[in-house]
Length: 182
Image 1 (tube, helix red, strand yellow):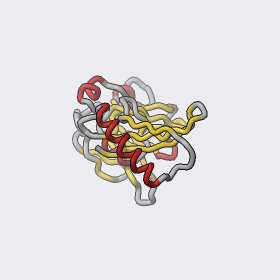
Image 2: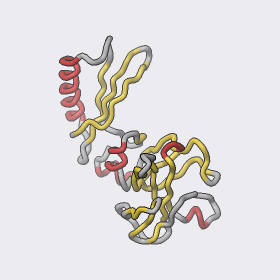
Image 3: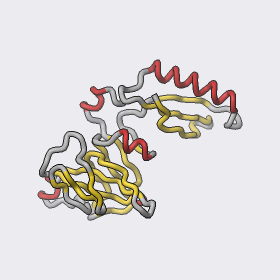
Image 4: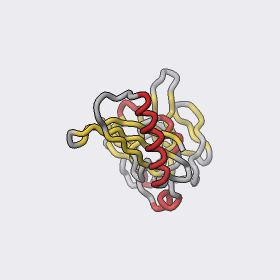
C-alpha cells in the first residue's frame, strides 16, 4: 500500500489532514485503520503541524479528481472526464479513457485521453491534435501506446494543455467498482 495524496483542509472551523492511500487490489477499512495508526505515530514523533487537527485516511474513491502525475499512471485506461477553463473547439467538458499525462521537453504537461469519435461524426466538436489509428498514435510528435481495452477505429486521441485543465476526474463505471479499484 502507498500514500497517494495528502491535503490539509479546514472543515467547520476544524483543521483536517486527509491522507489517501492506494493499492492495486483495492483498500479495505483495515488498511485505512493500519495506515492511520502508522501516520499518527509518525506525526506525533515529528510534530510538523502546529495546533490541533484531525487525521483522516481513506481510499481514493470511485470518482476521484486526479492531481499528481503518479495518479495519471495508476489510472491509465480508466474512464475520465476532463474539464477545461477555456473551451476547446466550443467545448469545456470531454469524456474518454485516460491515456497519459505527457511531459513536454519544455516542462509543460499535456493531458491525453482517448475519445469515441462517434461524436465527431454526428457533428459535435470534440477537439484534438491527433488521430487514433489502430495500435499506434502520435501525440505532439511522440508515439503513444494504445490504452487497455482499445478497439481500432472510431476512437481518437485528444490532448489538452494542463494549464487549461481545471480538473481530470475519474468516472464511476461498474467494471472498475467490481475490480475493487476504489
